[in-house]
Image (cartoon, rainbow over all chains, first blue to last red; front, side, top):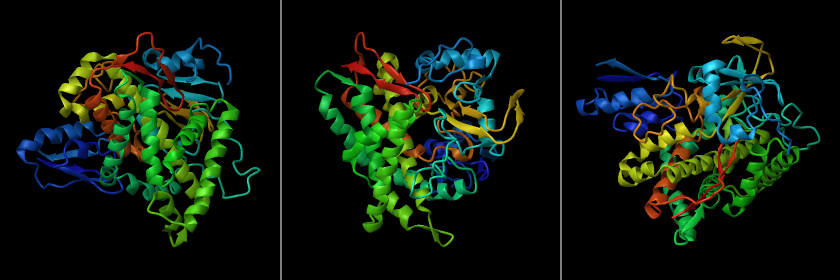
Length: 64
Length: 404
């Protein structure tokens, strides 16, 4: 699984980081980013939770 | 205090300070969502009240038609010139970035955000935990406490005082001013007293910090340059006052509502004690179910939104708490599910004005509940207790007597 955070949509709620700090980081200004190239299989469920909890619909699954 | 006439028709004459709305807004929103999802009133000022998640978030994102220059839910004196009879820094910017649109919003927000990044907030955990422990030491052995006034109310004000670099000894005074401008905004005398208290205090702090800069937010704002120029004193003043105003009432209300919920829902309380790993999810769920904050927007030009003829100058109350109770967006929104997996709540707003202090608020709420439950795992509302709620801009319990 590969993920992307849309920087135009992200507003820094940091819900992704709270749910999956292994996959996401958030910078000093609130912008989230994906810190892994490929999401390890054991973290895929966490990744899906992050997608489903983002209030700005900013996280996309770019490949399963 | 202005007398509030009872509301007969919530769709055409709502009033967020009507006692029934303050006590139980949930049933009013449910009725409105099913019939007239955007209510209107002419009380105080022509204002609209969306109740659906879709409408609230759409309006929050439409910054062209819905400005943040006037964000007070209770309009007060916002249409008057803030610089009239005032010989000092320019007050026209209000409390940026919350009371601003881009471009002022963009750069003032960037100055504030690093102070509330998750990394910085991690550093405030020991201070917060120590505060909670000390408060609990004061009443844990007595068998009773006011969870709102003795505990919730005491925590965020001291953390934000630390961040601002102002004296925590003045916490009760700060709390009084903040309540005057938010909770009692309908009372012109109290509102003015709170606003003057805050203004005069921070004016003094500006001079003090200029002479003796410290390692705090206020000092940094005074020494920062933006595009090669220092930040206007009026803007520094507004940002400092915002940090205090926004950092006090809101989180205190969230902590209070959460403790009220646990005091009145023993199954949830027992579960959270038995399964502390649920805490992060539970925090989001409590924030969803008891979102404290409603903000306002001002309509910039006549626009018809979802069939509502909104006029330039009208207010729209950004009803994030109602959005978070919308059954179109949440399954069984009326039920608090501490393990709710899908929870796209907007307790901290939506769009470019997402609460700048959300990481801090979340941390304070989590630490406050962890420490309370570790010391007082078994508690309930005192028998016959009269819980009182504040409403309007910020909803939360002000008196919440519990026994243990």
